Length: 166
Ligand SMILES: CC(C)(COP(=O)(O)OP(=O)(O)OC[C@H]1O[C@@H](n2cnc3c(N)ncnc32)[C@H](O)[C@@H]1OP(=O)(O)O)[C@@H](O)C(=O)NCCC(=O)NCCS
Image (cartoon, rainbow, N blue to C red; front, side, top):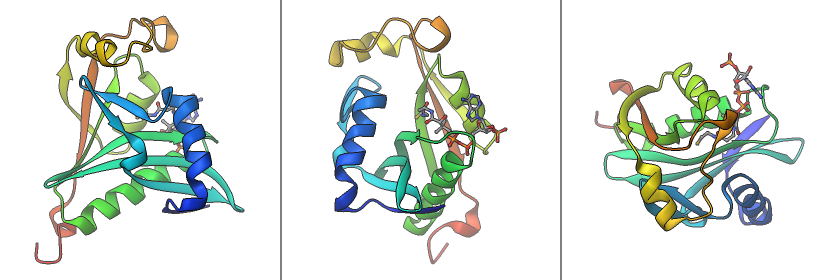
């Protein structure tokens, strides 16, 4: 299994992942729609078959994981993507990797926290605004939990990984 930056040949597969998992390429985060097609993307593949996708936004001091999807759960695809994003962020010299997930996504909360991410913010009722910009977001999420809030998690990168001069 390898992880690499997305290439033009991945486009159709990426669009399929975004359509299947996220209802299309426009991803809602804190009441704003972001086009994942314009994000930096990494793909995990095995024997030439794509198995996982991470899309990321870059800001001056942070990288945001916009989407993270595994098409073959429980065999390290998601972990490999997280490792690649963290090492890429370190190369960029940013201080942290952050992401938002929804209050119903208990699996993601477990997954990220077991991999060093800390909960740093709770955006109460943010899904009200989310539905204004993306009305297709359902009222109920995983496990029948009302989909109401976004939670912010971050990974602070070790200082020895900061930039060439840091
Ligand atoms: C979160 C996600 C990316 C993890 O990907 P993955 O390829 O399964 O990741 P890994 O195999 O590296 O690790 C998964 C962990 O969850 C466990 N796991 C895998 N599939 C599982 C499932 N269906 N139910 C419960 N646990 C599961 C694994 O045993 C492993 O546990 P560990 O933390 O004890 O090591 C994947 O579940 C996914 O695509 N979820 C849907 C999209 C999503 O919610 N993305 C995150 C929000 S941005």
